[in-house]
Amino acid sequence: MIAVKSRVDTWLGRFTMYRLILWVLGVLVVYSMVLSILGWLTFGLPEMLVHLLLCLGVTYGSNRLLAAVFGVKPHTESSLITALLLYFLFWPAFGLTDMAGVALACVLASASKYALAFRGRHIFNPAAAGAFITGLTGLNIATWWAATPAMLWLLVPGVLLVLYRTRKLLMATVFLTVATGIITLELVGRSMTFGQALWQALAQRPLLFFVGFMLSEPLTLPPRRWQQLALAGVVGLVFAVPYNFGFVANSPELALLLGNLIAFFLGQRGGVELTFKGSRVLTPGSTEFRFEPVRPVRFAAGQFMELNLPHSRSDGRGRRRVFSITSAPGAPEVTFGVGTAGPLSTAKKALLALQPGDIVSATAVGGDFLLPHDAGKPVLLIAAGIGITPFLSQLAADGTARDTVVLYLAKGHDDMAWEEQLEASGASVIARLADGSTPPGFMLDAGTSRIDAARLKELVPDIADREVFVSGSPASVDSLRSAARGAGARRVHVDSFAGY
Image (tube, rainbow, N blue to C red; front, side, top):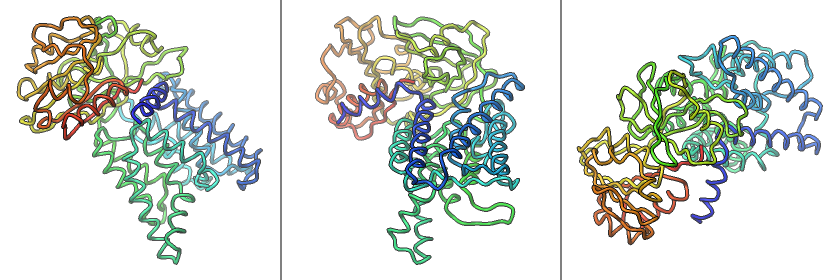
């Protein structure tokens, strides 16, 4: 089971979350047209083709035009995703008024990224903003026709794939539980059976499409998991409870916009500009990059930052990449430790090509890989290779205030980075070097044997009393998490590097 999960994680790690969503939506578009040919949808293939071209053309064109006006590089993947979302939100039709409404929604969706933004960060989901404002004009109203029973055959696996890749399955469960429960109870009150009501809630309301492709959008979510779960519950409530205030009534897009606004005030408000100061090679396969933020950055030790690295001739993995922050909160510079062993993605090549003074935008800060608030709680930090990065910020922030053991797994001594910081932290550091080389003198040599439950128990006899944190590649994390649990660890937190 662990081996299968590792293979799935490795395969999904080849895609950025944006690229995966784009591919899944593209497959659903093709599937919807097949359903139309089979006569399982109420509109014809010509309407669907024109509708698709209208959404793609207007959204892409307006996004590029607005990017030129605002002097920024357009994000092609983002505009294509927005276009495909609008394709599924508005009913395909040849009526001039209907088509004008769709075109308006596309333009408004693109404009919302620039006009409804704060310090370079858009506040609202673009597709939802475009659909909601268009509905107020009366030109067209979003029908969310993706909520069609025939679409479920591919919609369900597509949504599950996206939610698994973005680690939002729990958040989706909270939303679906709240929204489905309310809708089902309401329909049962209208004399439906429980089965009929549940089927209508999941198959004929856009719950699945909404949570898979829109609520889970990373740029409009708060940074902490508990905040995301609370937000999912609130949005589920607003989504499902019927209301009508005359000029507005309950709709999926309004529920999402409300959630976006709440998330904006919970997180880092606005994008962050970082001035590149320099880099240094740490090991043959890792490099540290230093940036000075134009304004203070709010983050907690152990969190990540998403950098926007525009570059031409992308290898298909996108330009937004996530990196763990290695500097302590409040430090004058923000640093990242990045694996730079070949083969390099085009985004990492762009990162390596930065010159001092270059400006890079950070589009998101988040993550829940945080040490316990109680400084008296002892911890065990297990790092596999570049997985040491989030622990550096934690060790720098905690200093010697906590009883900390670090287990550092690397290929050899030459592949160990940040030795000075590890020694200065005061933590007890255990090194397991696969090639049998000798670790620095302040580290305990764990030899070359595999770290399984028995060996981990030998190295850290009081592991049951420690909270355990594991960081590294998905395969390493799965193996080490199992070893920690087998050794008696009660709480194990993981942070897998899934190939961003």
